[in-house]
Length: 555
Image 1: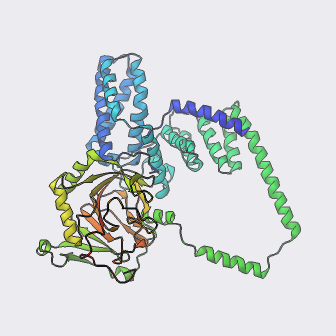
Image 2: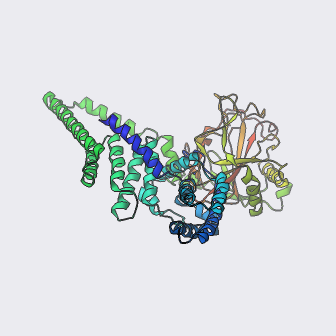
């Protein structure tokens, strides 16, 4: 029965795909999430399409009333969005709906226009299509929303109503939006999120929201997702609701019988098990009780999994800074041992964490420099890469969700000035450091827990560079983030929040050259807004006289 169900389900799923091709935004993880800089361009592209569409409507006003209504809706939306593009796209639902419109709904509109062809609009749409998102983008968009939902413990209704912290452009998700998000999760065999979003779609339908979708279709997905999670009784309940709306639904009729059979079978197994325990009359001995207590105590003291610690820190929970340790953190004016450049104008430095020692420099990069760096980086932004420990080469990874570009002094003298500033303040040689990397994390963009340095089991991590291991990391924050986007250190319970114009610095290696494993860190997903950073990975070679080797392993 279930096999036949799955086959029928695959057929109906193909039909659903034809009806509603899902498009969204920033992961898992994220397949190819656009950074906000490029998403802004898509908004202007969409606005240009709306202008072209309105020209077409003036030519065929009477015939194409449906198209005119669509254009008016889009004209209003893009006018609002382009007044504050980055702020508008900082809301995950706005970015999600932009991708959905461009990848799916404009295509549907193209078919409508072709039925009574007018060359002007179609030619413009065809030209602009080369800038449209891909299937990979829309899958990444869906996963970005689901990732945000999990990390920040957001219920589906909060996301659907657009009620997120720091939001300036609130956006509501329709029944179709919720349904499509659930369907993407379903196709990814993610029945947990399928249930959440199908339930949300059903809730909005029950509240009277108008939609071309009917409850039968939503209930079909919902009941099956619940069954796949082992909750047969609830699956049976939703199947009965489905049949009350469509008594002739063949798959539901078959599932009803199957679920009733499975539920009865489950009850019999439980009854037999209870009977056997009763017959045995088994009683716990004092020794057994002691063992259980011991087991519970051991469980209570087990370490929290890294993923959970990471998500807690992203939410601002679980930060392990005691008042006593906090009292030892200071702020100061810093000239790096009387460096001539900073004798008369020392920089502001503050301690962010003690172990590992992390410092933040305030007002260390100007707005003008930030805009120039972003301007240079935007045309070069590509999916961010990581070093493959096996090959030593750069490769993309699902746990790093951002786009990045690399800049040198050849691109602009300002980059040399920035590099020199890092050298003056850290006292470390920049000639052997990697190029300045600029990264843009759009909504949902993240970099999961990782080390910047190569471990002992990765001897070839930076072999191609020939400059040794990454001794230290310098990280500029080039934007404020409305919500999310912290840099967290799960092993020590530290969280550093983005602040525009500041930079943080830490050593990845002890003076002995051994790796400091407490520097394992992550970039939390951006919930609202967008995050621009640039970083400098500083290497061992050239530091022999600037940071002499320590005598003990952890020195």
